[in-house]
Length: 346
Ligand code: 26A
Image (cartoon, rainbow, N blue to C red; front, side, top):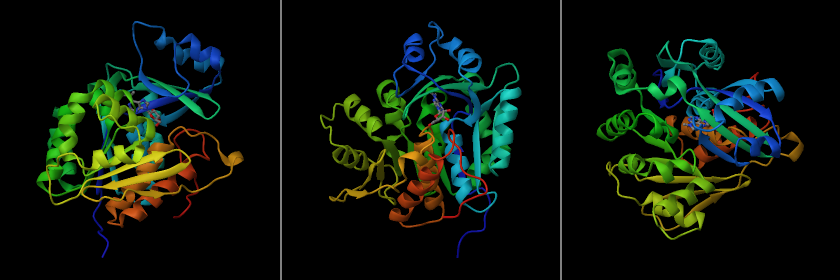
């Protein structure tokens, strides 16, 4: 029988408000951005001017973002009411109010560590064609801490949850909180799901990432993140299937679960490797026509959301991948990392 427990999935990362607009090459060049990338804003550059520029000159939209918050909203979209809770740091301002409102509408419970003295984090998203360039000023999200996670009411949610999802972007913020969840998962044989999030995480946050690796029951990434992992770890392999296999077979803390590595590749098939298995499987994506594509920002987060929903429900791996692909195909039809309402059913 399916569990009737509430808040079975607990997610952690950085709540951000996306300031998203269609831009052009000149705009990318002005701020030194690549067409398809995710970076932290450099306060010593002009990055912090990007947000006003997008709002004033490019008709930017304010959309609830933060990669794992998008994933959490996505998982909740596919699960019964009150299934998902999300943790992260936010301010006490207009942007936080927009985030809370979007999450409330999605039925996602959020428990922010509120810092009223620091603005809520923002992410400038510049869309050019099918590319998106993201530049994040973490703000209050950067102040998430172990103290919040260990607060008795929050820790009760941790103990109650049956699965944890951590966005790799949180390695820039609070690795100790990630490790705490990771160890809690292993000690209680609960699945710990980690997203690589962006190439700069395996490149520049290699040490905290590697410290968490033994605890990954599921590791999710896209092809560029997989390649960045292989490069930064000197694996000497470029083939996505081989990288997935290497990830799946890293040393593991909890031997009761075989690690699964899941690599998405845009419209190309999703690659899945299981620890100890020779065969790497490929699952074709759900095809949608070109003119149905609104924007692909958040497609990876949506995939992770559907995948996590499947894990929480104890579905077979193949179904979890299918649920991820289904939710990604819905999100691509929306503006930004959003899901259609009224709800579609899987
Ligand atoms: C620490 N960084 C850079 C980030 C992010 C981030 N979420 C958390 N931390 N940079 C971009 N994002 C989010 O990624 C989503 C699309 O996948 C954006 O907010 C956007 O909603």
